[in-house]
Image (cartoon, rainbow over all chains, first blue to last red):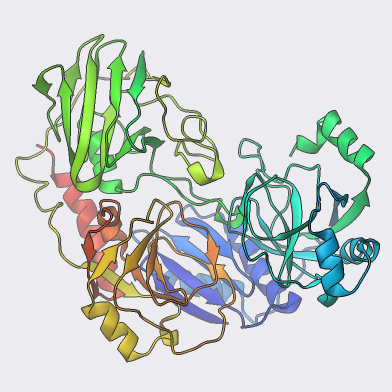
Length: 230
Length: 308
């Protein structure tokens, strides 16, 4: 573990240089320990793949003081999993209207569209962190065969809930935005609601599975409106 | 009491001191770009520092007051008129019921702040009234103001205004090098990259906004070519993409990113970043972290002493 001053108001705690669930477990353990500490001198916590950025008020807390708090919270670098490893299911409709790039992904992988859907909806994915836009999850666990470069030209507008692939990543667009990911489906669930008590459906460290649903279920979930509650 | 927006200006938003505690959900702090001018605007009219006020960018708004109010304008100078009369700057003043305050071009900086005694009545989203336009939430309907918008003003709890010591803000507008500390990925860059960063003159690009200021000038290239694992971005980080042209990440920045960060603007100079206009020239000078914290402490002390 390396503790680096990133600015006059922040420390970056680096656990390693790879994307791995083991390193990430240490990021999340420190993240949760600092959340539980709940000290008003801390302003923001930014988990990454293998690091945690801590933004704080430098007039009330020094880099050295915070550094020793972090070292005390991470004595040997081993953390106990607090059992919050429940798996959240995200229903996805993989029909062509929602997944205009599904056929291209299948062709690139040398598979049928059905096989792509089966492969995409079988692993348990790890939510490494949220970033880029509010509620956007960086997931680990996409099968190698589904890796595919992003679109050369991004689309000007992508509907919120769209599920896509870019490089080694798969993810969900939390709201309407431009973007260059290959779209393979859409979830009826709302991923981000700024006015909800807990504004995002997923948190860093969560585990998720995609489950394939048909168009009727997609419409039903949207109609019931429950999909929109966070 | 209400204020109606007759003309919105170029990009006018409701801001406060920002939204903290949600970066792990991908939520940027947003908040006033020039925090110091924002705080002074509120203090002048007798508000608490964090009360919602308006941030006007490059071209000010035209506002119609339903009832009388006490307002203040701070930040970059703006040609503001009430009828034929020039509105005061850096000074609380009365606006009569029914009158129109017309703010024109903003000069010698990018942003002008308008506070009103009592403050704008804006719902709190994740603990802040700040507009985060890229995320479509906060402020008024998650967007910049439009013609016809109506803002509610809260009833002031007490009516006392403050006056600045004469000439006390002159030092604020002083130009000079932006002070930075070395960044989290400083070892990615060799001495020649730092020499360029600290000797070059950079020009603020037109493609700059509240999420970041793109600079054009001497390219600073990392000596490593490997990719950085995406990590958290501190406010004011100077990141360097492949083309070597630095970007200062600002209040609406993304919370994580994959480019190496060579340096970071110190907290005490972030208000100056908020006043940079496209085509302005920027130079950087290095300070240590203890110096940067001392400068911030000095600025807080200064803020307590600027009023008569």
